[in-house]
Amino acid sequence: MCYSKNDNNKVVDWIKMTNNNSSLSITEKVGYSLGDLAANLIFQTLMTFLAFFYTDVYNIPANKAAAIIFIGGMIGACFNPIMGIIADRTVTRWGKFRPWILWTAIPFGVSALLAFSTPDFSDDGKVIYALTTYVFLVLMYSANNLPYAALSGVLTGNMKERNSLSSYRFVAVMVAQFIIQVLLLPLVIILGDGDKALGFTKAMTVFSLVGIVFFLITFLTTRERVVPAVEQKSSIKQDILDLLKNRPWLIILSVTILIFITLALKGGMTIYYFQHYLDVGQIAIFLENSGFNTFIANLNNVLIGAGLSEFQWPKDAATSGFSLFNACGILFMIVGIGVSKPLADRYGKRDVFSLSLAIAAITLALFYFYSPQSIIAVFSTQIIHGYFYGITIPLLWAMIADVADYSEWKNNRRATAIIFSAMIFGLKVGLSVGGSLVAIILAYYGYSNELAVQASDTTEGIKFSISLISALPFVLAILILFAYEINKKMEHLIESDLFQRRVT
Image (cartoon, rainbow, N blue to C red; front, side, top):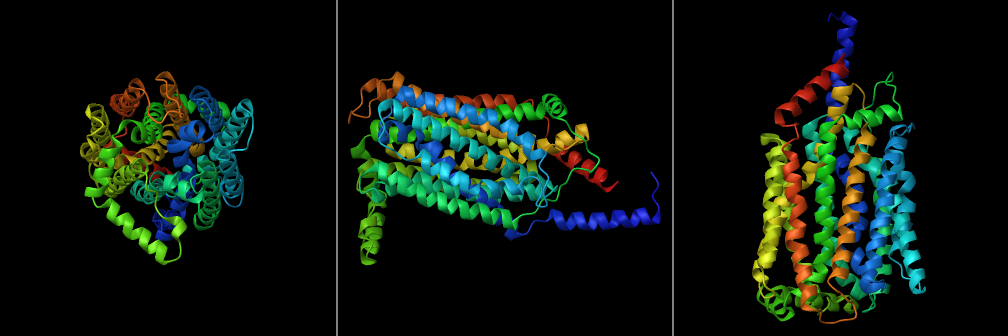
């Protein structure tokens, strides 16, 4: 192909512009990541406490709670493709995806507060209220988080920068996860003065307000750069046909569903594992010997000295053990996130992801072999699990962005939001299935929130679900990834070819 001097000058100018745009500033990376922190204050609460909130706080029977979580989640999941189609066709002076973060910030916050409120209705009224508010929440989550996720695919076309951006955003995810999985239950007890219903309402009010502010920061600090060609024409039918022909998309969709089944099942069952399976006396001894009680005593003294005696840490060993267990996993997830990018740059996302997920699955299975007294083994395994699962966290979303590039590379058409909508669909399906499995398993094994000591069959069911059942979806995901063709070599080929197309 021949170029005139004028054409060559345009190419040079375009390359300079692209190089500048593809290198994201720290401000933009941090601003973008705050959106994930905001969303995950709510998402992590759903994944960790929704079943517990329905069964033990709002007193909804486990079988009805399972139906609410599944039906509500599936409605939200089915809305994702619609939202993807809408987002891809949104045209504003702010871009396609950024305005949705602005428009949905307040409704998302309101929906979260309503979903974790406990109005005094009849038994049937509680079920109707819970289902209605949960559906409202998952719809707002889709309208907000799908464009947010798609935004990562258009901030830059540089795959290494995407790896870096993913690391930033998932450090933010870990911060949110730490706040929810480590601090939320103690905060609920403290803020409600023992009344969990009141405590949840107060905590979610704070999280909703913080989330609204963070979404606004994300909107203000980011900019869309990867823009489809003006002449690109698209139809809903063509978008769907492109998806169905995109084998990497089908694979990553399946992997996403399976991973979030595990996350929702393990996350939702952990509170029951500590309250009803592990030996509370042995937990108390572990907390004393590990120095946790000394740390908390010093913390309480500081709070008392500051006149904040009402914020003292609860004395319940199961609550403290649950918080420390999650803290150990999260801290080592952050370490795993830290090494994820250099490993992916060297060996490719697919291979690093698959190996790390395999080790994470093995560690989950190990929980099946631990007795109620094996507290040290339980915590040690959680640390190893957290590290290797942490490596996979930023890679999954970076791989989804790669799938969007693969679609453009194959079809000469870019449809970022519908690619990401399918992944958020997978996330919602996984959350719905995994979350409902928590309640289904509890109901099957005869769980009752009115019993201080559960039957032996119930405690064995809790152990079985947090270990072998939780590990199974990870194993299936690893097997599916053998058919995923975007390895390190193909990553570079796609990036290079797309760069050349955009130049010409």
